[in-house]
Length: 189
Image 1: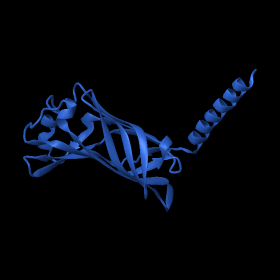
Image 2: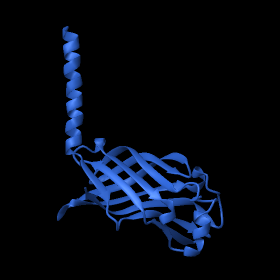
Image 3: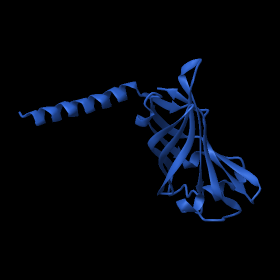
């Protein structure tokens, strides 16, 4: 073995060890059942329609000391959506908007956590609705609960346009801009 091969082997081992150490310190989290994962959108230009997904599969790997190694995923069951205006359910779950029969889930997968200081992060990732994937940025606050280290408060928001995901534009008085929100707590697994 020459010196170059030895150095290369040592360097690779160091990189692997750093990756293992980062994974050891990262904690695995899941959203608590009471956490709100949903959206609001203007209807007829003035009233607000709110929707909450009742069935959410979630996971986050997060270490506040190494947020660059964090990741988060959500899978939302579209048919579990409860609305503040139940009379709109057929329209919202129907073919022109969510098209729940053909696309039963919506997903978010993070790519990057950008720390901004004071428990604030920008989380870059992909949102998939109706089989269409678009990049989004979640403006997020993550703060450990000082009285219970098994819990972490979460507030995250982003805005998307319905038509970017193949939903009918200006349909039934439902606004084009949709505010997506996650509000509640992550719980350590």
